[in-house]
Amino acid sequence: ATDAILSCPGCFTEVCVLCQKHARYAGQYRAVFAQNVCVVRESALVARGGGDARVTGGTEALLSDVGERFHEVKCETCREVVGVIDDDEVYHFFNVFPSQG
Image (cartoon, rainbow, N blue to C red; front, side, top):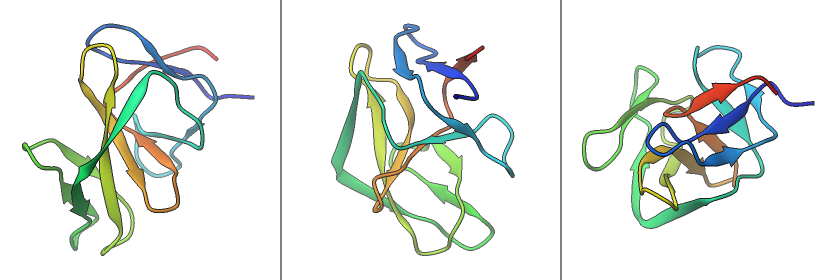
């Protein structure tokens, strides 16, 4: 079962249909599978102390472990940043529109 169906807030394209709501951060979801997204491998970000990280371009996301590397995940349709992916290939969605799963 899924906690929500996630859509891009820019164009409402579905980006994930099987996800888990983050236990600690409201409005964040994690998933192993995604659709209609592209991963920007050219830019990496690293979590800083205090549990946050800064993505190139100023997009901020609350992330877990200090030193963990992430890459931006964008909607394929409109190129809106919808989240990040870590080195374990787990998606962390934070800029999405959730609906009932």
